[in-house]
Length: 315
Image 1: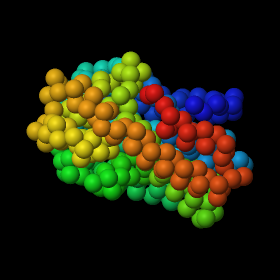
Image 2: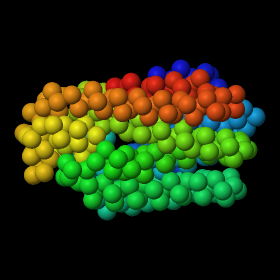
Image 3: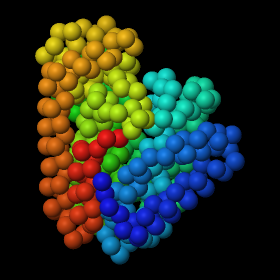
């Protein structure tokens, strides 16, 4: 858990106000966008923008605008993911797909993407816009790769990590680099922030996939085994599928609701979660190593707390 100072809390509150203004502009899908905003979230990505900005620019309005833009992209991906997965709940609340249907969910995700780029373009920093657009391209490529890997227990760890880098790591890296870019950091610092964000994103995603196997639904806000049911092969499932033929069989034929708990029990018994945590911690160590290169330029201590919290979390 990252312990924030009043200045950091004030930054998040400024981002929150911009988010409310961005999704509440009266457009036809603004109510669905506001529904997504009300579902909450850690606001980790905006915080990365803030904490990775060099001190002189950390409180500047463009850094707030960038934090808003990154969170809008994240919100858009959640709406689209819920639509693709036909997910009824997100953080314990009904999803836009469940409440309004697939057409509105699709339009809402597109709307949030557009609002994100409107926010960032208003900073006047076109290289910053390019950083975020590259991350969005990676998101789309990652979604395609996830669909290609669906239901395949023969997906390798490297293939899984490549997908996670596209779907999660690049947006984390974009958040870190936007803070550096808008804070006028030099190219060496931006390169270190890129490596930091990618490694943090991988650690975060692996931890998220572990929680899908043994988390508390009351805390995570979604049922156990969501990945298993929709055919998404995560690191725990890949490792367990290579060790337990019954787990592999369920992945190949597609899980039914009655398969979830027995299969997840077998995943735990295989030792896959223990080994997946080792992978997550290795990427967390790489993220901290990248921070060592920019200590003094960014809020390194709080960023290290964020790294450790990303791996050792319950939601």
